[in-house]
Amino acid sequence: MNRLEIARPPLPSTPIMGGCHCGAVRYAITARPKAVNACHCDDCKRLSGATFGVYLHVAKEALDVTSGTFDTFRRTGGSGGTIPIDRCTECGTRMWHLPEAAPGLVILCAGTLDDPSWAVPTSHIFTEEAALDAVAASDALVIEAFNSTRQALWDHFDRLYPS
Ligand SMILES: [Zn+2]
Ligand SMILES: [Zn+2]
Image (cartoon, rainbow, N blue to C red; front, side, top):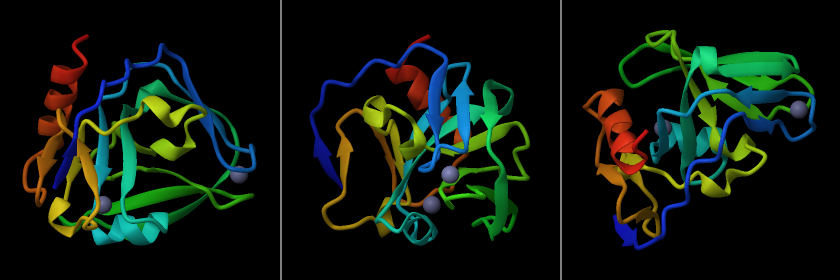
C-alpha cells in the first residue's frame, strides 16, 4: 500500500459532535475514540459508494444520540455475525454499525463528524482489496486481510495517541 508522510493531527477535545446529512440525527461522542480505522473490503465499498470506509471505534456508552430516528439494515460480517447498520430515517445517511458480537462497541462512520479533518486513519484493514491509489499515513497500521482482533487496532491507536 502507498504510504504518505504526514503530521498527524491531534485528537479533538470531547464532546466530539456529528450528525447526518439532513440534520435530523445529531450525536456527541463523550470519550476519546478507540481507533480511526479504514476498511477497504468490498462490503465497505458498496455501503459507502466509495472505495473504502473510515470509522471511529467508540465505546457505546460514549455515544450520546441527541436527536433523530433510524432505519436499521443488517449485514453479515466476515465471521458470520450479524451487524445492524443504522441510517437516518429522513435522509438515509449511514451513521454507524452495531456488531452484535461486540455489544459495547459502535463503529461510527467518520464522515458524519462535523469536523472529520482530524480523523486520519490509524489503521487500514483488508488492504489486499484496496484501490490501486489508496494511501496510508506512514505511521498507520496496515493489515492485508483482517484475521487479528480489534484490540490490535486499539493498541496501535493508543501508541499514536498516548492518553
Ligand atoms: Zn438525516
Ligand atoms: Zn469493510
